Length: 158
Figure 1 (cartoon, one colour):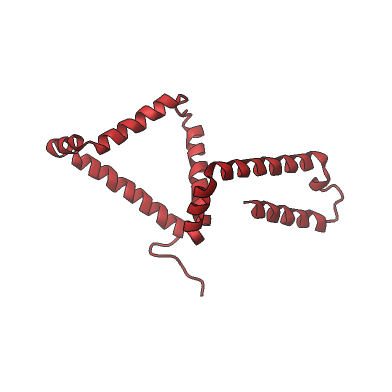
Figure 2 (cartoon, rainbow, N blue to C red; figure 1 turned 90 degrees about the vertical axis):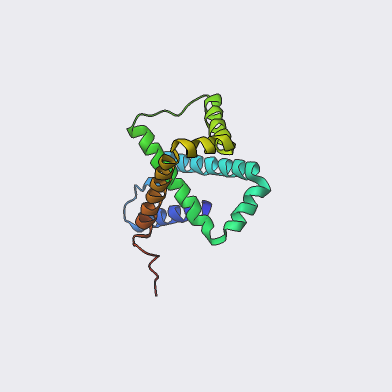
């Protein structure tokens, strides 16, 4: 991320330095303070993530190889989209950790329970699960098509 921020700042600086205007926003002390604050916040968050993820994060990042950048980008897009949906629908996530833990433990316990799957097969609820899985796959596929901007495969530059 840091190289991208400095590259953006350089391009921004070139644009304003090449103009004849002497009142460049980069000369404004408030803008300079904001840029410094953003850089400090980025450095702190990067250090925190590196400390928390540690060697495991480095290993996963290394395993992703060339896919690392698209994975990070897509994660940010999903995060941004989720924020927009939460704001537009005026939703609020559960604030208590126990609510999250209870929901995920219930999902895990059902998925790990053989009796749940037998009951699902016996009652015919498997069709509903199949439809939900097919919908999720369809939405994923449509997202892939939109992301590629092409129906099949990626367009190659020759």
